Length: 108
Image (tube, rainbow, N blue to C red):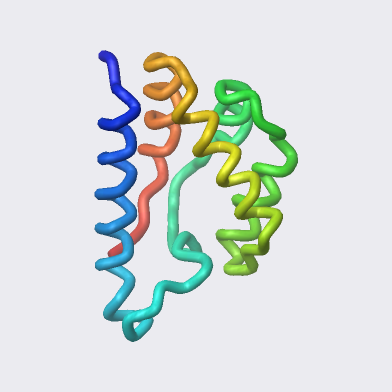
């Protein structure tokens, strides 16, 4: 299965839009910094970091911070690096990462 860059961008944009719409009623029109504190499931940070060749310890810290609701600019940087690497990744690597992300769910 091949995913083009434009398809990936569309998928990510739609997911972000959906998450923002889900959160709006609970935070009175503003999206909180965390958005993931109620997420459940396992996130294999090591697999994502290895697949996309990003710093595993920084990613692990950023994921931990976002779950605690204490996201900071350094976390935003590593998430940006992950997203940039995802855009450059092969279709196979993209599917690997998406399958890891699929294992995490949040109550709406």
